Image (cartoon, rainbow, N blue to C red; front, top):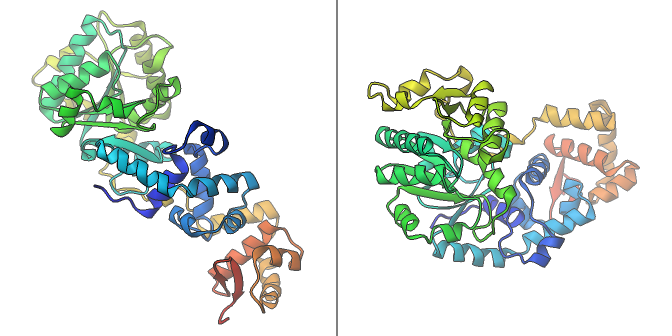
Length: 416
């Protein structure tokens, strides 16, 4: 069992819907990736600093520190207080072979952070060997109703990948995805399946379960493992397929519609990874359009040429912007932490105040703190808004001019 750290527990409490019934979710919805990014930015640039510290802070202090409205502070307070339910849900998932990791963990797939950055999901549910995400990998995507030429291409391509040690990354759907996964396993290779919904059901399939136990398949999902299918989740997984890969290959795509097309076009626009598209006499119109948009053509002749390795082929046909060095795990806070100068500039821009004003007001702050006071009391005494006094208090703390007390949150002079 992988032991989650306290930052992960806070993330799970706020971003997952584990243990929440439909009525609860209507009132207190878990944080989406974009909402979580905004909240984390507030946290790391406040005295709270880390998500784990939310577990030991009172609602009113939280509201004051992060400048939250009443409804959002109620939302956070409710979600954080369901620790007992979360513990039960995590234990239940682990008993069925499903585990959780978050952006706060060292085992979180580094490629997702490196490629997707803030778009990397706060939480991942998985079953199988998570270390497969650190191996050299190629995404393979395509239509559900792939034709015979596409099927042959997929099988031969994946067979060569397996022989050269590449992990196949797919979306776990019918058609190209399933053919790719099955072929890789049959050829003693490895596969990562990004499951859009009901991971719990997926891993109960006998062949899937056996492949997981053999260490050849990693099934992972961004959604609750018991969630039903949604079009949004199916489309959303595209970026994770690309984000876990070094290169990507489109076997067959419709023209200007469908998940394969949308994912490929997004990848070309955002330049996540180099894109290759099956080329040849009998290819879908969508393939031709993707090549016109910048996809690199790859034909069956290249796959069948025993003198050409994929490593040489891909490495010799990519732009320098796509070359990936061996990445180190990125700390979640490095994406959000502003420098002291950046924080100061933001506050100056929003309040039209300079540090000279702080130098003038500091003696009055210290005079008011003959006895400990909270932020609201200081704001009233100095007749300034809460945001401005917060800026000055943070500076005074950084300069070691005052001290902060907890339970409840108050400020006092050094030595008191």
